Amino acid sequence: MPFYEIHHICQLTASQKEELAGAITEIHSTLFTTPRLFVNVSYTDASSQDLFVAGKKKPGNHIRGHVRNGPGRKRSDWQQLCGRVTQEWDRIIGSGLPKVRRGDADQDTSLRSCILLGDLLFGTELGVAFPEAGGDAQWLEDNWEEFSKRADNGDEEMRDMLKECKERGLVGETNGMTAQQKLEEALGWGESA
Image 1: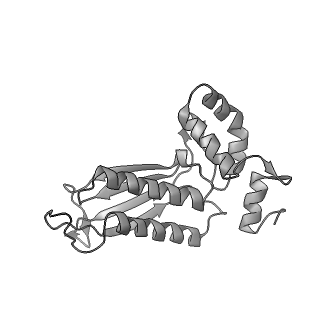
Image 2: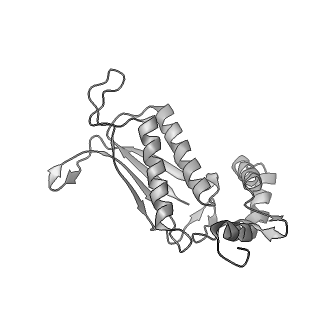
């Protein structure tokens, strides 16, 4: 569901890409109720692209996240997400203007921007329409039978997702509360709060 685009001008190793994608996935999926399977991260080498700021050529490293926005997601959630993603960039890639890395020529490894766009109105992923922001728990319950069939038919990604959802308590009932009620209680609103 969320789609993070990383445009980089510094060279990134395969292990850096994998580690950063894992960190973004972990941050987004735990801050919200999105299963990890639906967090997408892509990389584009932007070192040959022209980017201008204030009318002057200014290449840089940027992360742009296309996310589902909704009433249950506050500005403070988005600030926390950007802050944590930026911290992970600095930890994995490095910060500084410019920073010399492993004997390479000077490279600007700083992250110039982390921008979130709440522009995901509708879409499908893995053949299933994704829910509105905040509707993940009900969506999981509504599609659980289909996801289970796919897992039973050998779909390893679905098997992993079902396991994750059970471990995180995103589905089923606990103490008479559905996952949606547990989420509402955690957020401090709804009948179960």
